[in-house]
Length: 444
Image (cartoon, rainbow, N blue to C red; front, top):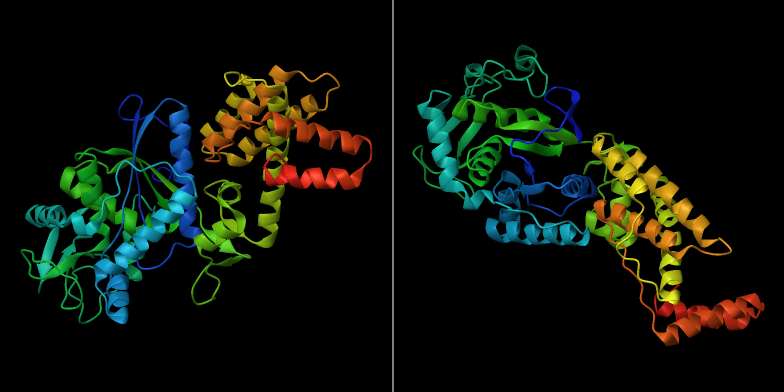
């Protein structure tokens, strides 16, 4: 496998730290609202990356967190006059429902900030003791000046960043780029600490949850949206280096954003599209197909045009597969163990090339075309039809789209044959009635 590494700005051969085992962490949601379609993209992309790795024989330990303490959560709780826990649990449940609807595989762990508080406080104290953090009036800040290569992950010069981060007169920070590890607060949920009552800063939380789930080791892959490269991921890596003197991750993988009708999605523009509404409108399979239809690093435009193109492409693959299912079920054939090795490995080659889904889709279209041609043969080769069908099924499973085999009762087989005869005899009224029955049974 080859992956584009944000840290080096290069496509690199992927070599895991442990043989045949991959440790992957992807930043999860801040749970104060429902998941929009942009949040759903990394859900699908990193679930697909995991499936590709598993198809290549790797055991993947995939962790993704919930940020369940944040100003936005606190403000929403105050607005609704409920606890922060109630807000967080509501939107964690909504997020999990979207994950399930999108047919994602179960996570190895889904840690929450509020359940990792002791470890977070201990980590901040360690940074303070090692001279990388300083406390001012109950707030604790990380000193970026102490990290020699700060900015290396996001490829930014700290001096250039400082120009836009000037310290206000009442600011407690020594450097405008210094960021909060612990925030003194008298509003909302708070915890006791060596620096008084407060709560942690966002950038510290993920580092500690990674450290806890992966026993302090450098992980193979750290993922998330491109918008997290700076400051979040830069600050994560800086803290880990300060505490452990080693990188947080070897490969940093970032997905592109989702636009809506050519515009950036934002509340101010009123064009936020909720993932649950997209899934309800398109269904899980088409939603996944759409989200994977362009290279993961590129911007995806959510529009009527992109939806129509995705729907056309998915039908191009699924239509001959369904016809093959019916044909094999009619003949009572069971060729579950065969598949077209050449097409399946061509598909995997594309997916191993930095998740090149457009090229992988091209392999699917080609295989679907071959299947269609085999079905139209005057003397159908049933084992070959089964090979193509099963190969497409294996490819689609890597994309998170499951294709079920079809079984038919003798009564259903007779009904199908009667429909074919009615069409052949041009008895369209009878054919329409029989077709309706077959549609109700899910055969057509």
